[in-house]
Image (cartoon, rainbow, N blue to C red; front, side):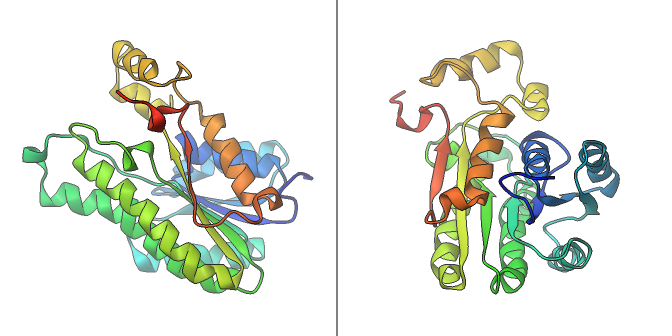
Length: 251
């Protein structure tokens, strides 16, 4: 398939649904071969089937990104089966919103393992493969990295950490022709969000956004496409808010 990413290989984590799936499907539609990675390989396979039915090329990878050795194995398989690696999107996250008093060691370990440690292991693993050919690493952060929320201490803290590691990695890996950026969405109307919030809560969140609506998965996928393409070739170390102006609003 031809397109803005023709001839490139992408790996997307958390790609069986939501933002990750939208990004994986758009990349494939734009000509990239895509490694679709999620916790269970059959979750990923469902997305691969959609991509291949549309004429794209993709493989399914089951991987717990908090496991460094599992990440290493998934990346190695991507390089062997798809012929290299040019684009990596870390979208995987495990969430639990609760008051500070209720946070347990298990919740902290799981959320940080997937949402922070997993990005560290991914960057560490892919850098040697991408160094000779250059590439783009895109981490999914959140506008919550910039604004506090009740019952979201861990989520806000982890996403702020994603912004910090993105900036640090961009400085270290830039000389190797690897760009590292982050996308910080506001609330996006994914299946997962709709399962957690009722209509009134969704409407309240939309009302806080200056553009007056929630984000759609395509809003984030289009930003990820731009960051993966040559059109953003001089963009490095940025956390780009795709939030309808929420980060600038005084609430």
